[in-house]
Image 1 (cartoon, helix red, strand yellow):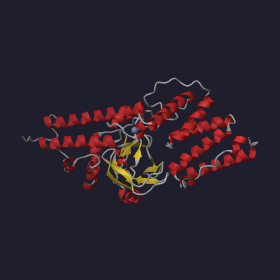
Image 2: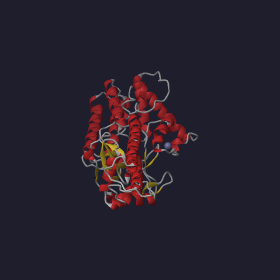
Image 3: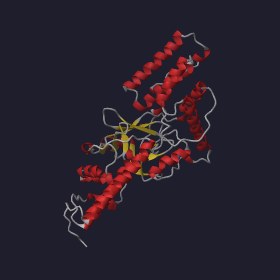
Image 4: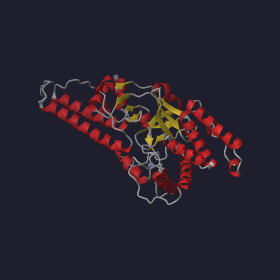
Length: 395
Ligand SMILES: [Zn+2]
């Protein structure tokens, strides 16, 4: 049965159905956003004028180092087409859609309608089936029949779902963005890439943090890399999947080693007061007894474990900086130097060798090493200091 509807008649059953659905999806998105915000996001206000569609820059980058194809982890994934060195920028991508503030399905819908048909198809293919694409291609601005209203409802539900599953935060969670390629990165608890939005350029950058062989799938960690298994399970519930990576196989020696190390890091972070600096306090806490060892010893153990973790997250930089200052104030020069060197190491991997941050970091390490070796009476331990990290360490 087709029903003629006046688009201004808000009492019409079908129109009310559409509005109700919009509210329900908004509520669902807010609920999920609120849950997320307790994990790693700050709530922000919605600014109706700030949502925009920018298109994709995939043409510029994809042929070089990666391709998108079916993944054994989930759906489509991104795979290296060449051997990639640690520290390599693999993807630098402009957002397809941006929204300032948290999800509002009406604004997502408006932005979607501003995309070209080709861009819409690409957006929908992030998650949709062929019939989804067909539904979302029809551009119904004002539903006039019950069939129209049904299509609009389905469009809203699909768009909300695609947005909720693929948007990531940037600028300290002030904006939410969708990148058509980057959001294909599947999860691993021992990822081989790290991502960040580059200040100034508006690009979202994916960088290798381990050597990656041609044909390997690129992965990122959807959960903070220091979390133990039970904490990761809770975080990953948001995406409704169970991780099967090597770190999650707790029956294997490797999985047990990773688990033990991450729990140990959290205990030491609690003992040294660095849990907040490491971003751990935003997650469901583990139950453990704080180790009864001197704070200095705990800090030395903590930074030692962070060196081993192999994921040079910027989160750790604050811990290294604090540890550097503390060790230097106590005259523990070897530890201080290692912290400074590792701080710089993270800059080098994440920002690249020509970045001013990296250049400054290299100079700070060189200067400090020179000062240590020239100005201080050289105790034996200083003779064993490793040379400063340089770009050659990634070759
Ligand atoms: Zn895992």
